[in-house]
Image (cartoon, rainbow, N blue to C red; front, top):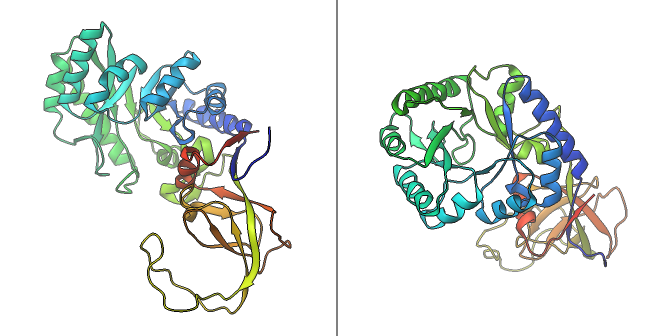
Length: 357
């Protein structure tokens, strides 16, 4: 196959090892791990790495990806990670074993859909403990509990919570204790025990390291930690996981010395922003053939010492290479390590193929 750039190169063995380390550390605390595949669009090699690493469930936010996961026949249960649209409920019950829910209307819709199709379905009630994304508010579980009480084909598996996804709220022992209390109250309302108390995602691993996850929390949904070995919510690399598990490779299409400040009147850029420039005199600049249509450029870190990212347009990444540790020329390939946001964009860009090594 002809090589092409840009491309995203992924070390599946490193991801498998990260999954194994996460599962081992969580298992020691009585916590199961749902491997979150959405960050790499449920790529089969990444799914197999999570399965080999010991994840007990696979989770994704897109019903299309769930179809791909189901076709792989991994033997693991499948979780829809995003609260579903009412319009997609027939696909949800046919592809997922369980889904996250936050409204009585969704439960009623799932019940009708299951009755029509002869299927059964489980749900995890999401509780909003302050991040202000999805979830019933802390003291408002009554309506959804009533809907579950009258359901015959939809059963509540447990409760869950998100941290750091929208509001940046960080998990604490106190908030997780609050979740377990809400779960216990739901058990009383429903009249049966809950099997899952899902205490968040990668951001909760820091509590695990500190021994601060309270008894009762028995599941975490881990994507970023396994895929990248990082935790963006705490702006940290997780010390016991492998980092730099993947990288973007891009080809240079121009290298030349230019002024460091635009010449002439300056307005907004192509994205409506007003960039600020520092006059450093003439500098050697390079352009890589990748841009904002492909990646969140703010989430890229150049591998080569002395290279810095100045900015980007739709299709061009502008680099300062004046102090580069190596002499660069047109046609050279540079590596960049993505953060979580950059990874998501790269994985979904039709212009950036995967290469799994």
